[in-house]
Image 1 (cartoon, helix red, strand yellow):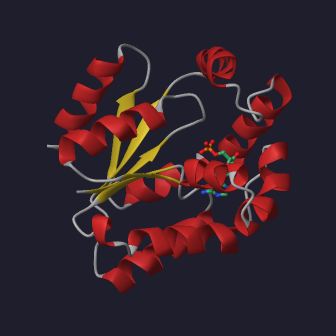
Image 2: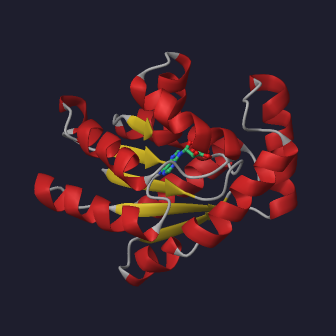
Amino acid sequence: MRLLIMGPQGVGKGTQAELLSKYFNIPAISTGDIFRYNLKNETPLGLEAKAFIDKGLLVPDELTNKIVKDRLAKDDAKNGWVLDGYPRNASQVEALDTILEELGTPLDHAVALNADRQVLIERMKKRAEIEGRADDTPEIIAKRLDVYAHETEPLLAIYKKRGALVEVDGVGEVETISKNIISALK
Ligand code: AMP
């Protein structure tokens, strides 16, 4: 199973990606997590990405696309994956299409989780208290939601047109949402 999990920040993509990963026995690949790992370890990639992440902006496509290309080519991704936080703009959709064509592995579905903005802001405030993420301050949260609305949300229409989009309500119990996603994928 090759899946995208899409939706705004705070909607629960990471949690649902982990549950899908267990259910289908595929790796959950989060570009945000890869960047955070590199930031923490002060790798050249982390240092390059830092200024963008700190401002709530997208890291340049060239860097991001390369990370995804390398990650999807790894052995553990041969039987599928769930990609969380990528693609985030139209050019990343094109890059992903090319990567998947080269690997000869088409995408199965794009899962979109929905929730309204106020619910998202509240969830991210809670997450900030628990995880202490540097980019979960009110200003940066607002910026990231704006970037999502302008650059990422329009991508849902692309996957819908391709007949690949599965839309699920992202508000409610984690287990219920997970069941709804899995039954929508069957
Ligand atoms: P996330 O945890 O997915 O919200 O990602 C945290 C930050 O990492 C984002 O605000 C971006 O700065 C960066 N990032 C993650 N995924 C991408 C992507 N696909 N393209 C560009 N930047 C990304």
